[in-house]
Image 1 (cartoon, rainbow, N blue to C red):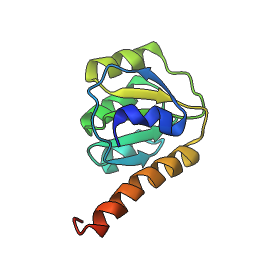
Image 2: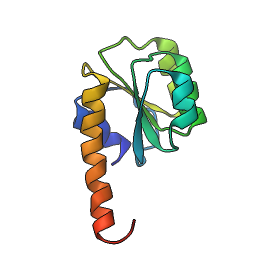
Image 3: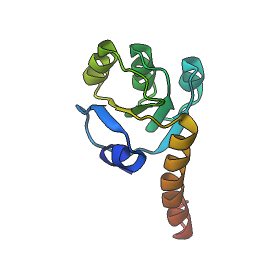
Length: 121
């Protein structure tokens, strides 16, 4: 799935769209930034309620191309500026982390199963 498809899939607004469109390889859901830093895989989208520039720093460190801020949390200007500088897409949705994660899992898992059926996994 491409980053540019993310917003429409989960019904989210892209509030930072200065990024290079690329593939999302997975999803990591968490609100504890140290947990995300320790466990998120490269290329995944981060689903969280943590709306501040430290979230961008973690995403950048882990090479995560997109952040989804849930529960319609306000996203401060310094987070948007940091995301622009790092070319990380930021989305905001009124849905909670569970719903967003489930929607993304369904989309990404279908792709994984299709690849596995072809014998590539």
